[in-house]
Amino acid sequence: MRQSRLLPYWLIAPIGIWLLLFFLIPFLSLVATSLYDPEGSVLTGYDMTWHVQNFWHVIKEYGPHLWRSLWWALIATAFCLVLGYILAYTIAFKTGRWKNVVLVLVIAPFLTSFLIRTNAWKLVLGDQSWLVHTLHSLHLLGADDRILATPVAAIAGLTYNYMPFAILPLYTSIEKIDRRLLEAAGDLYAGGFTTFRKVTLPLTLPGVVSATLLTFIPAVGDYINAQLLGSTSDRVIGSDIQALFTSQADYASAGALSVLLLLLILASTILYVRKAGTEELL
Image (cartoon, rainbow, N blue to C red; front, side, top):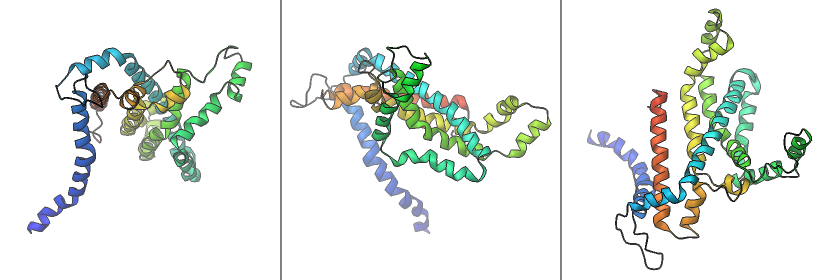
């Protein structure tokens, strides 16, 4: 009898040990790093002085880069939600027996490297690409204008790379909708937009929230798209953290910037989920 009561604890013990070793301890180490004396170095070592001023320093120094990361992630998330919802709705309701094939095509980009996919966009958005030539011929771009090495290219890369993270949860929510509810809305003389606003969107709200979080959270910390597709003047917070930890070896500032980014993402996630009011996620 006693063994049966202890069985659940034995089952979760490996997960608990894993989280302790590879999440909790590294997280506490990161928090401690953010409070190191900034006067230290890799050679002389760092002293734990609870130097909270590290956070004020990184806000003054890297604040614009932090807000740029948040803004780009918001724009990319909005594009992923709109385009992903349309595609997920089409897959769920319009593809019929080709549904599984289309879903495989959505997941197919994950079979290649993230770097390869991002570098491929340099060919699509490059100055000599067919897309840029077409935009020039249509006079949508000036003769000296370009797409590559601009915020537009970086946001396009973010949208493309994280689109599947939005499509899959949206498709799952849309697929669960009872078609009879949509038919009932039509019987009550509701138009297409009214049916979507009153029936479809509320029923798929858990998928919308999941898609938002799965897209926004990794997009905030992403710096590969900004580095490969953006310009050198448009630095994002991920680039700063990577440089501080590696080339500059400023561990105190890097830790403070990492903890600050983590707290901002955590606060915005909790606020968003509460405002959305989805019982499945709460």
